[in-house]
Image (cartoon, rainbow, N blue to C red; front, side, top):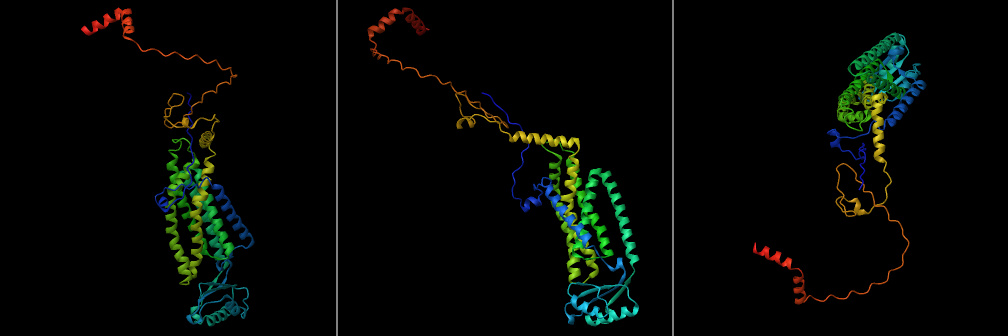
Length: 425
């Protein structure tokens, strides 16, 4: 009986529906790295839309970057809600047809125009106060020169470049240069998408927006560093389990910190959402809208990029190393061997069950192995022979008589003597 042992190879776990308990206790098995191509297509599409919107529409730069005069006021309760068309009608009578009008909530209005003289500013202020049903003193007027916005932009760009160099140096020292590259690519991804949101929606870009851009960089990196730290811990044990690769290890690390990333993102987004929706649309804080919108979009994209952008890029870079490429090839070979089944001759169903006799023998079960019993070779076909003649019937044997028994005893006297000796002993 010949036996053949099947090779031990990694087998993918069957897909199953996850529950909230699995997510809470970090028992999820989501295939983040396996479907990284999907995330790449999604991120690439968002980046393409953002770049096209930026080229076609541009950004709606605020008065701080272009210079001019700004009026801001809130309508009285008797006037009800504000209307953009009504505000433009008031401004068109004063020759300000190209002014920008922004209404936040129901009763907060912001008007921006080119730089005007003191006399013209007073006329516009009086007209807007009459429309709002409030005194002239409740209409705030701000004059800003374009040089101030240019200084803010240049300093922000300098801070961004220094930030990238410092972060790259720190991540290279703390982890490695591949992790630094993946983290910086994720940060650039977040900035492009956030700018694209402003280009598509044409929300106003103010110095508060620039500050929010710098703020979201820190959050995006903090979430990415948490994931990379877990990857580094699991990397020390990589190779101890047969069939494990760097990508599967990274995917396991992502599932282990998934709940932590979700909790961090929710805790960070809740106060920002309160600033954006409650502070802006309930209390009419226009200054908060510029800061909260960029912060909200940046935090949301940062939570996405740390899992679906930075970590897949890291796995892609590490799989190019000879050590991890060899692990991947070995795992693929083991998986291929496990899926290939050698063709065998059909056997009886009883031969497939352990501890069932086959051809007079027993099949002994072997732990962790597949035992295949070689079937007996088929007998060669022979030519039919002529039937043999029937044998004559055997005559019946007569029962033994006392005389015959005595004659047998007489024929073997020595046997009777030996039996007599045994009885005497």
